[in-house]
Length: 462
Ligand SMILES: *Cc1c(COP(=O)(O)O)cnc(C)c1O
Figure 1 (cartoon, protein in one colour):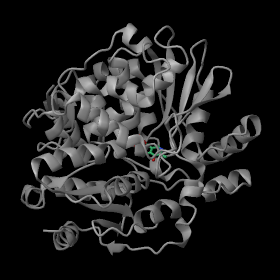
Figure 2: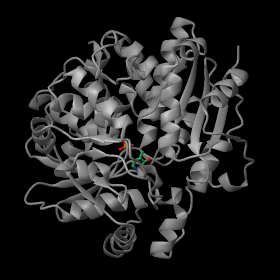
Figure 3: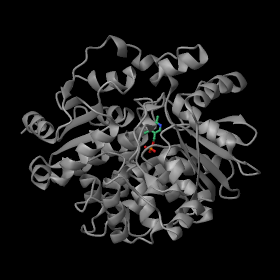
């Protein structure tokens, strides 16, 4: 299995190299050259299996011969051992034909743990074998950073630096990044918004001298291994409501388009997915784009669902690559136009996108109202991101096809917004109840490439 860049100019890589690199050297994102498929029998055989067993079946064909079967099984087992729920991703029913997939039982209470815990184990095994070390730099709107720090803290061959927009993430998110005591962990509070953090991260990757000098590796949602890890729960959940004998739809609270793109991969692999619904908050650039209005950046407006406050949705490039018939030159041109503010999608590509994706948005008031009403009708306390998913799912014409909405974070990660809507302040699970008492360690840093580079060079271990 080889991986190619969405911009067509970088060398094809193995799974291991694509994973360790993150962003391709032409600025593009790695995607598999072909998508392996699973037969209906193989999918039916997942019924009743453990999450780990399904993970092995789904991911094995993408990994190639980089790991032995035994190694890969051990990696998966270690990745999910720290989750607070035996089934890893439990499904609860909200209403007739509407289900909620709880993806918040990992160590940092958001779905990012599914990918990041796996990536931590994959990096550990691959780097240990090569006798190499890397510097991981990530940008976060909150949940990626805490998940990355949790996955890499204390590992010998990794130093990890996480940029987050100063003052724009929740206190729980911040504390999850600033309280680990391991010396290989560095939280950086950058002036600016999440798109600024993401832009500086891209600058660092495009500075090849720096990139090679510190052996930069990326674990943002552009990393293919992360998308792959997220494909698994589309299978486990769809099979529990009747796939492959029955079609299933999904609604996904969306920011960087990584989670929903994993659903698209599951569909390509043969899972009978009917609709994939992109749910956005008031920062609705994806909803507008899928509605045919082109992809044009505006200002990011802070919301009660900060992990979805975004204008440049990096994984959308992977969807565009397929929509443009895998023409890397065409994608490179769109991305150039995006730097200048935005682009229009060609009619043919728009058709392909609309064949696969629907979309909807929820305002701040609708989000709060959905937290209140869902608590009342089901007893389930939603985080604001998950509430956006539930609201948008309810707006769809569900018909006979069951809808699964992804619950992307635990309500206790966003206690202020949840309390304002419901009157209930959701407590942290007991295993992290002392989070508010731990000491914080963080560096405030300017939105400036040179400042970032020199800070990182000065703090990596030799
Ligand atoms: C990251 C995140 C999202 C958005 O997921 P993408 O893969 O970036 O689209 C939604 N909700 C929560 C809680 C998140 O942490």
